[in-house]
Structures are given as C-alpha cells and as structure tokens.
Length: 175
Image 1 (spheres, one colour):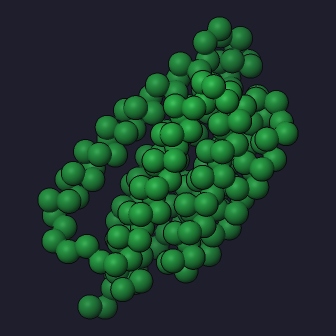
Image 2 (cartoon, one colour; image 1 turned 90 degrees about the vertical axis):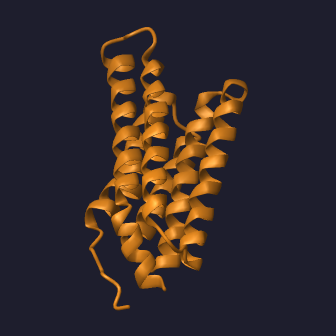
C-alpha cells in the first residue's frame, strides 16, 4: 500500500514542482522588485498563485478521470494536503488583519508540517528533512523583517517542495 502511494506521489510530483517553483518565482520577483528595484507594489506578483490554483484543479480533474480506486494512503495524503490548503486559504483571508509579517511564517510552518506528515507516512527521508527545514524557516521568520522572510520562504520551498520532488525516484509497485 505504501509503495503504490509512493508511486502515485511520484507521478503527482508535478504538484510539488508547480507550487514549489511558482512560490519560489513569486518570492524572488517580490524580493527583487521590492528591495532591489524599489517597485511600489511588489506584492502584486503573488496574484500569479491564482493561476497555480487553476492549474492544480485542472490537473486533479484530469487525474480523477483516469483513477478508478482511491487507497487508504491516498486518502491520507489528500487529507494532509487538503487540510494544509484550507489552512493557507484561511490565513490568506486573515493576513490583511494580522499582517503579512505574521502570515508568511505561518505559511512556511504549514508547508513544513504537511511535508513532514507526508514524509512520515511514506517513509521518505528527504521530504522529512525538508519539512523540518521549512518549519524552522517559519519559526526564524517570526523574528525577521519582511525582506528576510522572503529569503527564508525561498529556502523553505526549495527544501520542502523542489529538492524532494527532484530527488523522488519512480518506484513501481509490485502488484
């Protein structure tokens, strides 16, 4: 069961790449436009995340057409990542009140928690290390100015999404 879920995660690593590279790209663009080029509204780049949401749901819709059975571990993974997605959306709505300097560290901790939980369920050590690293980045970010939070966010998505996705190996289940 774990091996077939690992294979499914490998096949769905597109989602790790999608969210990892999109978040990394937006963080870099925000940092460069705001702190190097002094653009007045560097945060506007984050509107691209909505396109990521559309791509995510289109991908899941197509995958669902080809999927016949959902395993227990598949449901666990959907619960972990679905729960994280709900939490991120709720924090996004509250970020205008609590401030982005609080929201970004929470995002990093959520990325780390979901990555760590996935890693523990699948026994994937690199993702576990990435989840811990992302959570630590979030913890450190609480005491940093926003421009350094963006750098920590870059490290968090590199360690919890991008690097583990690149290092995943296709392990085809025996059954």
